[in-house]
Amino acid sequence: MTTLSGPFHRLFAASATANLADGLVLVGVPLLALRTTREPILISGIQAVFTLPWLLFALQAGALADRRGRRGLLVGAATLRGIVLALAGAAALTGNLTLAAIYLTVFVLGFGEVLFDTTSQSLVPAMVAREDLGRANGRLIGAQTVMNNFVGAPLAGVLVGLAGAAVLLGPAALYLIAAGLLAGLPQRYQPEARPPATMRADIAEGLQHLLQHPTLRSLGMLGAVLNLANAAYFGVIVLFVVGEGSPMGLPEVAFGALAAMLAAGSVTGSLLAARLEARFGPRRTLLTGVAGSSLLMVTPLVTTAVAPIAAMAFLLGLASVLVNVVVVSSRQRIVPGSLLGRVNASFRLLVMGAMPLGAAVGGAIASATDLRVTFATAVALQLLALLALHRPITDAALCPVDDPEEAPTTTAGATR
Image (cartoon, rainbow, N blue to C red; front, side):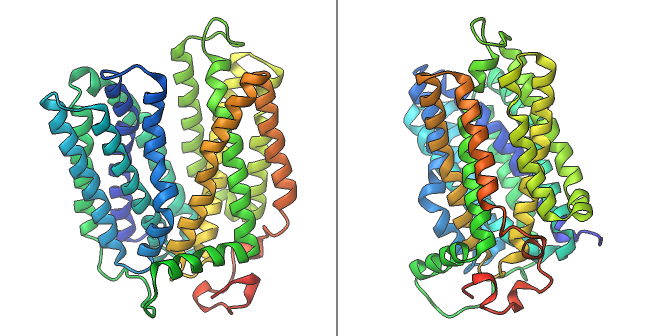
């Protein structure tokens, strides 16, 4: 295990700063929108608009990450988010922040997130040794969890209470600070020079590499089913936990405490991921994490007691981060650097595109039957996907000995 590089620590600092801004925005903007409307569909629409750029621009962002200077893309994405929030904050200060302006703001922020996340994941393998990818990704994911859930979310409530504009102007400043940190990255982190091609051809090459590589394809399909099932499960679990008529009958504050338990498990998982992967191998760590989280999700089917549900939340957070770190690190090891941006984007499009569908399906099942039917369906989907897709996910495939840039073009169905 080597020491993580100075440029990685700069990227880590910028990512932590940007994630603090993300936490403020994700909680603060819906609270701010409540001053304009209390219509449920309009409030939920904020989250839909924020995630829409993943469906519209993920593939294009991946193509840019493989063609343009990655430092410049990161700086540009952070700067764009800072500027649009500063404008929205100015509108809030003057009393001119309409719901339409909020929608436009979160759409631009979502686009910036797509570009930032796709590019940063493609940059990490150039900054750290291959054997340190798990440790580096664990730190990045841990910082994201801490800043979003432990710091940003509660601070957003305080800022909205003090002055609505503060929940926009504060993140604007943080994004611009992140841009300044990223501007100090060395210029050498550039994608490999390639022959000219259209964006459509670049996107097609990334999609083809993902779909024709057995292990990447299995990881992508498994991730899509897991996200669909989790969106269905967690989209309705608040109805199981909160309210006098709910099975658990807890107050709203208790749901926040469960969310904190989930986040605490995520942080713990981020600290343990690299060690567990090194000890047990990426395949066992990944598959055990998926199987374990699926079995844990059975808990509401057998009890409504607070202690087991809280333990489930903690362990689910831990298992989900283990799975996430292994998948991200393995993808960075498998995919050639010249394709990494496009494959990352194609992968994220597949797995994140399943979430809105899962939320809709979970709600429909719960409305037609019972909450526990939704929970059982989600668990069954995850276990069936694991049984169907686990075979191509091997240690040799997840952690290849050869550098992917030098691997034969026929290996494991690769298209390069």
